[in-house]
Length: 173
Image (cartoon, rainbow, N blue to C red; front, side):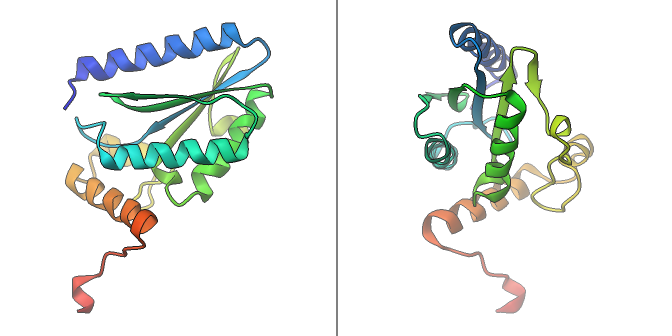
């Protein structure tokens, strides 16, 4: 389990590493993959499976780029400098988030010299909630779902991806 202070420190460290990578890779944008996992446990078998699947997807899409992976107590991270316009990279990474079986559980940010690129910057709608389909930010703000509900859905998605297991609806049995 990690504390709020550890989580905030990891975000600051991630931003500092992104700035350093931008400085070391002029003309590149930086892709940063993290795992969306609610609650104080950010590193476990589930988060590592999601992170590794995301890293593999990035490697497949950008086979000549150097991917740096970090397995931290605050969660899995992967970084990829790309010699392309940040908005182009964001379009590609959003496509991965939307089409990969675990993409909804990945957070793939793109940062250029001018700062981060959002989904809105490239004309895409905000991400949707795993459980109800509303905008994620509304559900988070309203605390519409329990951590247990979200973690159960995440486990279901990951199990289906890894093992082909589909949770059955007890009402149908």
